[in-house]
Length: 138
Image (cartoon, rainbow, N blue to C red; front, side, top):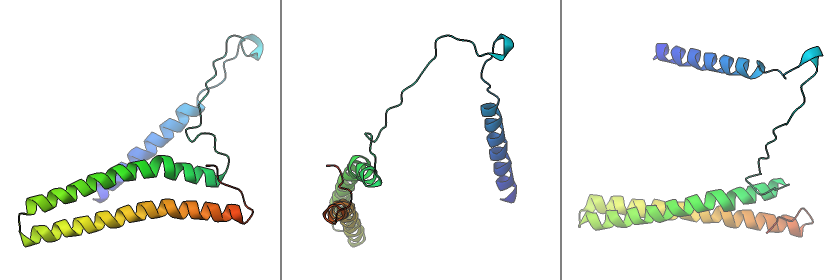
């Protein structure tokens, strides 16, 4: 165990050092007399994946509405389908029915937490807006 940990630590250290050395090894190209050559420059524009939010509240609302809720909603539907599958395959067996009940309970609680986080975020945002703070974008 100790030997594999040390091997892993050494490998990660070497990877980090080589990566940093490669990044710092790039210098700006210079022509005669130390002057940078002129020519076409390449620029890249990377758009903001969160839609150009400018406040922490807007960022959190975007993360919840655009990332967490869709993924959690799909997982909740799949979990309910799995719970129903457990009920169907139990065929009256008490231990399998108990497992199906527990699965349905945990799925329901998880879905309630997921939707509760959305409600709580909207209530906090609305309350802050009513108190005179920054209003979250809709």
